Amino acid sequence: MRFSDALGRQLELPAPPRRIISLVPSMTEWLFSVGAGERVVAVTDYCVEPAAAIAHLPRVRGTKNPDRAAIISLQPDLVIAEQEENRERDVRALSEAGINVYVTAIRSVADAVKQLAALAAVLDVTPVAAPMLAAIEAAIAAPPPPTRRVLALIWRDPWMAVGQATYAGDVLRLSGGINVAIELPGRYPRATLAEFLAFDPEVILLPSEPYPFSERDLPAFAEVTGRCRLAFCDGMALTWPGPRTVTALTTFRHLLEDAL
Image (cartoon, rainbow, N blue to C red; front, top):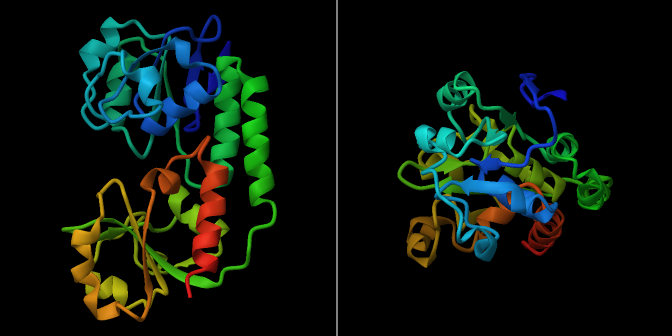
């Protein structure tokens, strides 16, 4: 069967893949959620869910430095990558070695629905995946109006935030958030904390990943204490499309509604 990935790259498989390597933590979780977990033969060091199910699987290093030789030696039918998380040169090298690499490019919640549906068809798991995707579509059908100015930080030293054309940014939009960081260029803009705070956010989200924000970081925000709400949140909920999406939207909608 012939099919295209999210980048329009043409791939061909004689049958639905039986040996899959996931280079994307969120996709690893999604594969198990749609009943394709038994086909996964390796994951990255950063794949952590579902913890018990992947504990025995070989690891092929990180998302940015995968062990290409180990991947090739495992003879996968399909490797799943994400344009944002994985390097083009690794995708190219694996493809040149004769490995089918399916690349996603999820930049919004609607992208997640469309691209996960397409991948489900490739894996022949559409009946299992369909209810989850339908639930996401229902959850985004009537989003609340944007009412809260929000800043979602993702890194410190340098300070970085969720910006434009990102899945996390779209989660915030669909939750009633006005993402102040889109005033800056780039999908994950860098700036001083003072520059970010100058946009006068009402809510500052401090996710648990990729940078693990905690109580130790609160002194940096002393000047805005009382002016806005600081909220620790689940980084996976903010950035992982798939089985977490509906709950994430509910969680962030409540968080922003209760902000002030």
